[in-house]
Length: 152
View (tube, helix red, strand yellow):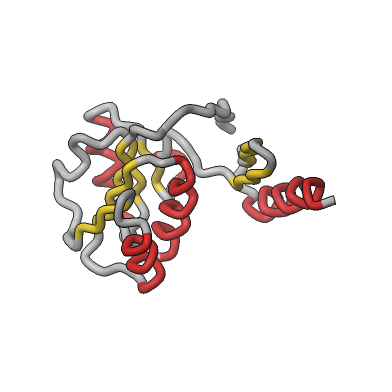
C-alpha cells in the first residue's frame, strides 16, 4: 500500500489542465475554483453543468472543445486525466510522466501523483481528507462529521 503525504500549497498562479468533460471533471474543477488557479478544460463534449461552471467562472476557467493529443499537457503545472477512456487516460499519464508534470488519473490510483481530497472549508480552515486504500465512503463520512463539528 502506498501512503501519500498531505501537502497544502498556494496554487493561485498554477495552471491546471482538466482533460474530460463529464461529472468527474466537473467535481475536480469545482474543487479548484476557490483556490484562484487557472483551469483549462479540454474535451470534445462537456456536460451541461461543466459548461455552466465555465461560463460563470470565465475569468478562471477556459473551455477548449477538442480531443486530447500528445503534447496537449505542455505548459501545464498539473494535469487531471478525467476521460471515460482508459487508453486516453493512460496516454495522458505517460505524457505527464515523461515531462515531469504531476498528474491525477481518475480511474487508476497507481498512475496518480496526487489525489483530490474531500474538503472541509470553514472559518479560514482548509481540511483535506483522503484514504490510502481508496475507501471513498469512509472519506465522505469523515468529511461530513468534521463539517458537522463546525455547524455546532
